[in-house]
Image (cartoon, rainbow, N blue to C red; front, side):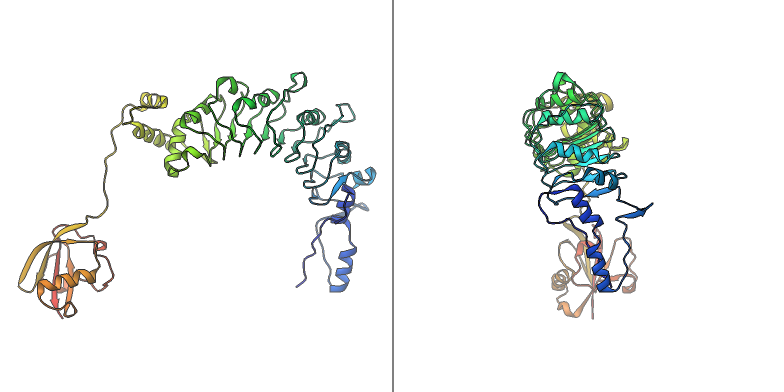
Length: 432
């Protein structure tokens, strides 16, 4: 069996995107030597030959390649004319002019991942007809420490960006956009693990992105009640991820209802309710969030909502202090009866009749013992060693014409309660 050929980036430092992709996708020297040595032919789908030229795949990944610049513009443009996605995360890009040079050579680029490049510098570039990258739809700048001014400059020259990733950038304060400019094309923002602790800190985001529909805040230490002044900045927000945030009470959670369009919420890893059973926690969340139709990735169906809201009423029925939501649900369902408590566990002790030859006795026995233990105790009644006795069981509905109609208990390790013994049932001892 032939070994697979693994293509990796060159370990050369301070190299270009062009050199890295040629090394990963186009360098055939190693492959040819391998083929000659192994005596086999290999076909791969990384590149294809069309009209005498080489076409790269539409999605390129060049991570950990020590990329710091674009490379020869003409050659890069020729190779990347059909590329749609470029992942150059975890490299050494420091100059935004080099980033612009890279994008310039990929005319149909829709997704660019620049995460974990040291791009914490400002960009002296302003929109012009020659610096408009309208094809870009998704931009990832996680862990770049990119300044906000540069982020706004990038959105100016990338007017089609709908999805923006700004996680792990140590943001604390979010400045307003220059001249209060808005970017209505942006619909989704990932903003995980920054230093956001108050909802008011997010207001500039809502003003900058008025059509924002999805906001992901995983790992931010955010807490506190959400005021209408905050939610007014997010009129279109319908999806909100607050996993592993620091919400501290049900009262804070209820203020999520102030978002006018919110229907999809993720609330996993919230400290104040982590010790609850999952079903109970989910029901209380659903009942408090009246407009939510999806919780933690699962659809909230009408039947689940009704069950949750009724359970909520019964949960607070005997509480001295009831949440506001309680009165709202009482108006919807009326006052509910308590659920009957039905104990389906078998009784610990039952009254049975024990028979041996001509004598019988009514007695109470524990069902929490093995057949062997029970038989040894009943042998005292017969005054015969248990090893010389057989034990039969028949419930009260069985007529007793003879031993053949009874069930002999042969499995000594079986527990008595598994017989589902009830008051009035009978046991019979028979000599061997």
